[in-house]
Image: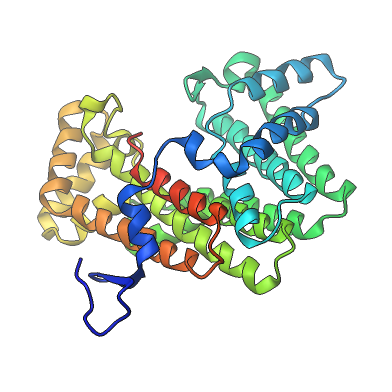
Length: 354
């Protein structure tokens, strides 16, 4: 990092990204990473959202109500609602529409996870048994359908078609991205550009929808909604690359490594390393992934290959570029506690250790 002598004294330079404002540097260096501190400007809204979301999940069917209670009980950090509320506060005023937007995105996302667990035949989700593990696939699929229908009705009942459009577009993108990855995984020929397209659809589109919904619910004009959506896309891209880097991390922190390799997923560190390899080396590594990825020693060989080929450093630099560009985009919005916390939340997602 270096200062620019002829620029405003409140700006700094990052190599490869250009000028960043001083307030960006301030919270890059010193902002808190506690989620409680980050959500302080919206703490009341988050508590109120909890109650409203629980109400949106209620049903008179005893079995379904039992499953809804189980889903609510095992909720995660609720990052998506936080993105929505902080985006709304950054762009305008938090309204009743913002609460419905947060419920809508949580219902859509939960439905996609329930269906994903069926597709993947997964027995666990965030350390809990999955719905299909407890109630079998048929019920799990129907539960996912119910969540999707409830999300649609929530928007239709209040005639919030802008929010519905943003949310359903995200579901379409996520489905297409998942199918595209499954199609290409068979050939193991994913290029860097194709990888970016897959993660844009699979992961970034959802975070982009959160930010766009927040802006829309606050009454922002279309230009501001579009800017917030682009901001969310950058965060989502950085988030997924960070997730992919965990596969090549230090297994002493308690997170298993090599899962993507075992599942034959081509992620950015591996794609880059293969692009720099000789024909024979590339053929050897692809052969391991195709036929021997269940062997611990072979997975370690692939990880060592990626590390020694610069794949980790390259993917980290790409992640940082998306991250820093997102911070620059955020600076275009009016300064407020919401904007500061939104920047802090961005940092939290990128600097997380799991």
